[in-house]
Amino acid sequence: MQLSSQKLYLLSLCLMALWLGLIIGAPFLLSLPSFNGNKVAFLIYWFFSPVCHQLKESSFIIYGNQMAVCSRCFGIYLGMMLGVFTYPLIRSLDFTRVIHRRYMMLAPLPMVGDVVLLAMRVYPSLLWLKALTGLFFGLALPFYLLPALYQMINQCFNFKSVASLIQTRGLK
Image (cartoon, rainbow, N blue to C red; front, side, top):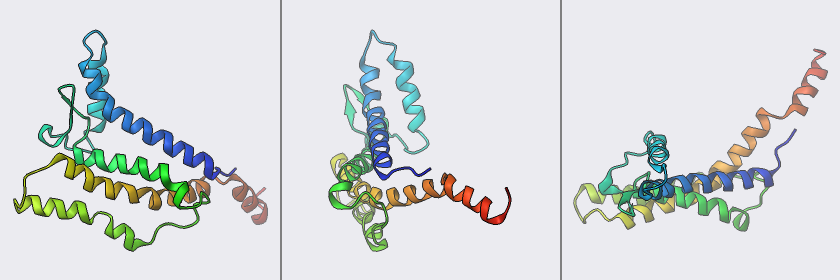
């Protein structure tokens, strides 16, 4: 049983939309007084706490509440969503080739440069710049991760190849 490339693409798109929806939705839920959104929002913040420091001074604010991740992480996830969305416009959905490693090594350079310049106090911390540098990195990730994920899923769940292996080895 093979997972079609179109199904993996649509699944990736839906998961990224859900991921971003949770990040943006948490501050909205906190702002609703009549809805029992506080418990749900706190669960969302807790869910994202292992992947982000969630410092208020590094986060975008919506309705007086910070997003579930910092601005840089938000940029990375938004970039990933845009990368998944534009994937079929740039590459074939057959997922046979990953992007060259040099591009994956170049993708985080703006982000690393921003961190270094912030540490050297060359300029103040700018949320939009953190998000923008994260976005560049996030844009590249689907072009590396989707082909690898597609191959991994189809190797792990390729029941036809397991059945043929059993038949050729005489294990039946």
